[in-house]
Amino acid sequence: MNTDLALIGLDELSALVSTMGFPGWRARQVLDWRKRGVLDPAAMNNIPMKLRQALQQHWPEPVIQLRQRQYSEDGTRKYLFALRGGGQVETVMIPEEKRITICLSSQVGCVLDCPFCNTGLQAFEKNLEAAAIVAQVWMVQQDILQQPVRQSRATRPTHLVYMGMGEPMANEAGLHDSLRFFLAEDGMGLSRRRITVSTSGLIPQIERLGAAWPVNLAISLHSADNELRNTLVPINRKYPLPALRQALNAWPLPAQRHITLEYVMLAGVNDRDEDAERLIAFVNKGRERVNLIRFNPHPGAGYQGSSRQHMDAFASLLVKAGVRATIRRSRGDDIMAACGQLRAASGQ
Ligand code: SAH
Ligand code: SF4
Image (cartoon, rainbow, N blue to C red; front, side):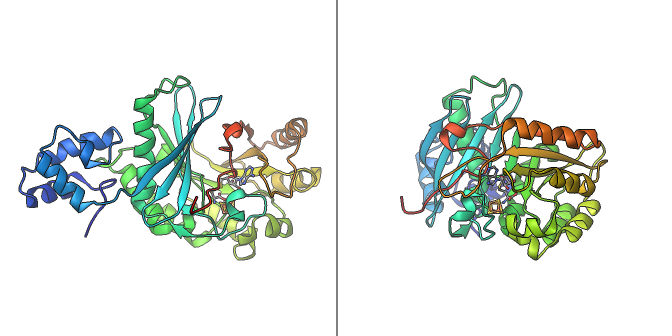
């Protein structure tokens, strides 16, 4: 078994260090480096050279490597990573006053082909192993320490959202193993309230996630009309709205929390009054909130976003009917880092 440095636990690492002929406490030093985002044993300069070399031999290739970094005017940063074994993904860091949110990728491409999504237009290549998901956070951590984020008082990532490239529920092993690490005391020790998994609605996977790791759930709804959702979110053909409704009602929701229904607003497609009415009828008001997302254009998209004014009007229809609705502020769109704009061609 060769657990990656990105997510190895203290006990396991101590045992490994002992078999390399060094005292187990050296493992703590290695994990202190990891806390600073350093995953390359060669750079751990308070550790004996022989141990560094042994660790490097044990993990000859890092699970991901930084290829490119882009900084947006609003403080958002986008990273391009190359994966061990091929393929590339993007990760986004979004600063707010008290938070630093990391938007994680879970797959290269996506098989689900939602027609408005840039990732969906890219052919599916592979699932990320859990270590590659976790390493995205370490690498961002390292960047934040090197180049402090002026737009936030936070100095380390506070929130994680699985909303980057790919459908996390279609990479169940990577999703569950990375969550185990993020939530574990001897992993990242994050509260489950700070982690959100977004899915287009794979029902058995939603049930299994709720049973294993009940973090925050976000559903890419985009239409409350079954026919229209078949086109916008094609997985709806397999798991139609009535089944989704049941799964949402059964989701283990803690007190004071809500499920988020994401709704990207496409002009003339799902933003009409009748769409609002269907949405109002679908929402379980006590448990769910609607998050209206501005459509982020990208080359190849055959859709236009609803205007800001129209989004406001649509939101007021919802609010008048007692549905809690917010409009998501778009971040990082000047560097193509906004929702649904991520895409990384392999072999670049
Ligand atoms: N596969 C998962 C998570 C990644 S997508 C899912 O579909 O939920 C994250 C969110 O961005 C989803 O709600 C997705 O529908 C939305 N999105 C995709 N393309 C978009 C675009 N061009 N503009 C705005 N939002 C988009
Ligand atoms: Fe895949 Fe989500 Fe994009 Fe749909 S919206 S193609 S599920 S990444």
